[in-house]
Length: 238
Image 1 (cartoon, rainbow, N blue to C red):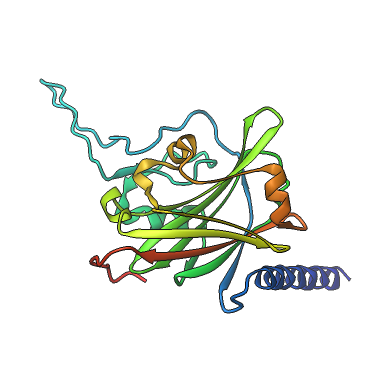
Image 2: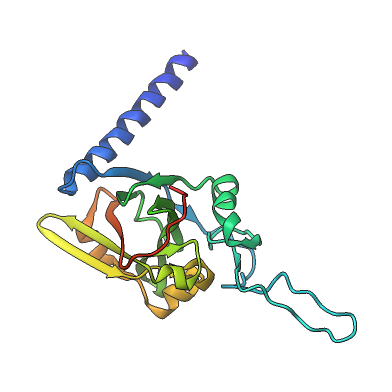
């Protein structure tokens, strides 16, 4: 009987997951887009977190106490995790997938389906996106501007340098009930830190009522498209 109950529960979960995929594909006109269902991460931080390129790999001379900073050393890109990891750009994606089990999607156009958007702030939804020879991070965060006033912030970050980020454009699109909202910009480098991007307001910003207009049963579907804006050398990573 217990086995039957567990199997039946698993079937219901699968049906619900397939329904979420269907809902997202129904919202967007391009049914061929890959849909990724992204579950939220709630705040598990303990203490403050250093932001941006930290220079954590400093080397002090015993006589001069000179500090040498590595400009490509970055903190963990999952701000709501209590993670003190730091590393170079080439190992960021390995850390995210192995330590935080962040999913990687491939292709220039995908649909990001954030579930349970009505959870109390702070909460985040994160995926990695592989296309055009590079890795990107899509971060959706819900946090309070002040008490009782939550907002949603969505941004695309390149796992690369700021100079490399200038070679790309990204578009985020919300589309539901004959309403469409689009944000287009150049991605920021993960060296800039998600916290800094949100503080600067250099991202898609939604207040709670607007987010509700585009939500469907507590889920928010965001179409993502990444393009190059100039001829640039691309890595072999896909």
